[in-house]
Image 1: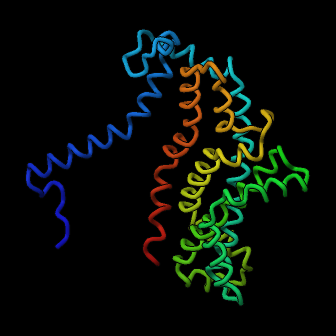
Image 2 (image 1 turned 180 degrees about the vertical axis):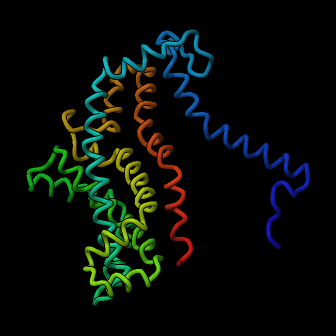
Image 3 (image 1 turned 135 degrees about the vertical axis):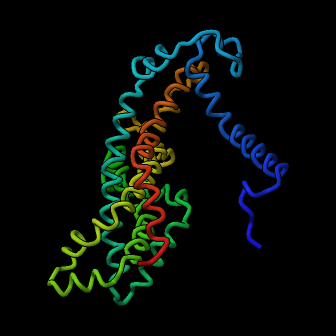
Length: 283
């Protein structure tokens, strides 16, 4: 009744499965391979229309150093860090506080409030483009770091609250009863009981939030028209000129932009896996 393991299947079926997986993986990685090859390819190859062939030379150092010496990507990179790090911290703090309250306290409107957090995740954020832009203009924070930090934090907190609420709800209730018996306040319970136990969940959430915010392009274009505030995703589009595009530099910049989320995942991979599976079983 249940699917058999791959190793227990027939040899022909196993070979077909492995071949299919290999083919799908290759097709999925093909654009990435093209970007990597283009990032080390001389400009002469691109001018000759050679996008898929083996490079005639390797301009690895020239192309990757050119990302920071010939373009303003260094400034865009710094802007992204200034925007992303405070936003992730804000998301973690707000979602942990809200998830703790919604999972451990019963009050009038608890279910409605939780439903609002869930429902907000299904709203297409494009419909809020004009109201958000007008609000930032009215508040005098349009085209500033603060505008992007505030709205990234706000838009990610809904999903993060759902994420943290489920993890905190899976913790044994005896821990909270013991904390109350010892006279701990709700804030002390949160800091000394909840936070140490949900660190893997916080690690997983930090990776997800960092990736979402770092890779955001829509709000970067809407709220940061100037280069002084523009993050890497919007800045990358500026590297393509109206008539000429240095695709080797653009490809190298694309690889550089992808490094921080990938490195964060590899450094915190163990915590990420634990965080995603921790709330699967209650107790």
